[in-house]
Length: 144
Image 1 (cartoon, helix red, strand yellow):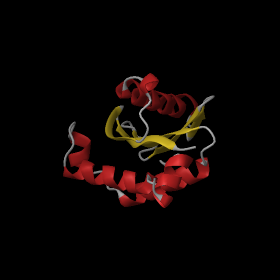
Image 2 (cartoon, helix red, strand yellow; image 1 turned 45 degrees about the horizontal axis):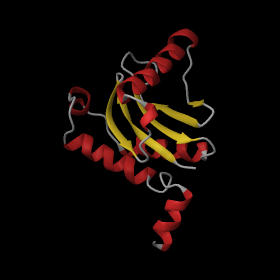
Image 3 (tube, one colour; image 1 turned 90 degrees about the vertical axis):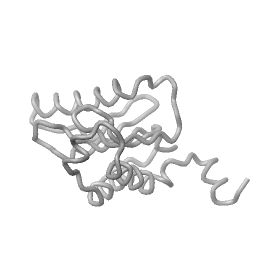
Image 4 (cartoon, helix red, strand yellow; image 1 turned 180 degrees about the horizontal axis):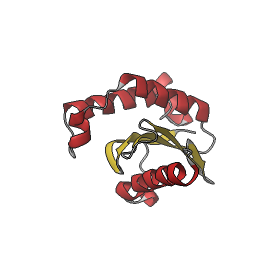
């Protein structure tokens, strides 16, 4: 089991997105991240609550809201295969949150800049071992 994708969503836009195992049937990342934002906004407005995880038949989505209760949703997220350790993903997302600083430059820029590249490197480093499927992890450790 492995993390397939992780990233940072600001106001429904995937500002940072790391895809570790491309899944064609997932479709447009803007639609997917827009859905994550819409669900989080719905939970906040309808129930005064937040979504932390969504479980599907094959996948699980873990969301960490960095701007809870505010108008502009800022979300860290990971999409993983079902069976991946959710508590470990939550811990890694919390570690990422501690290491990043959401600045005006990140909020205002629709393109990659030095700060978003830095955030992407933090996400990739934190998710590195979780993004390896068992066979890939063995190759990483023992070689081909």
